[in-house]
Length: 158
Image (tube, rainbow, N blue to C red; front, top):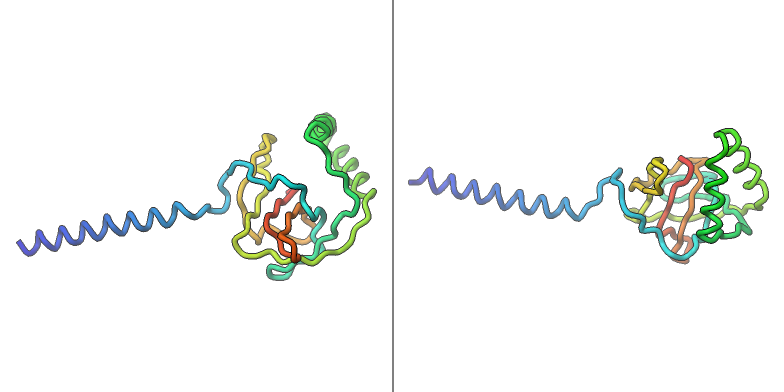
């Protein structure tokens, strides 16, 4: 009888522990999962290459004067770029990027904010990643909360 009671207590503890563990994991979005596009609807405040990164502080060469294209203009530009070879696309991007003046901006990227990048499948899908994916020379689009603090980061061209 004592063994049966111990077995029931162990079983209840195991089931309860599993339930608590699975619920705590459901709230976490692991790095690398494909997610629906939850990009902020307003235009980003910072676009540019990472000049340096130390901890969660980054310096970005922000492009000044970049015109935000409409969805229609973006679709047209994307169609034109897809017709080009990889070398032609790279040359076109470099020529476009040389049109912009840049100014260095220092930002803090708080732990836990969304950091995403494209999956590379050509369908516009994004995947979650983390701060370790941000390195010198990577092009970022950043939405800020105001006081030089990022609230959403999208890695481009990786």
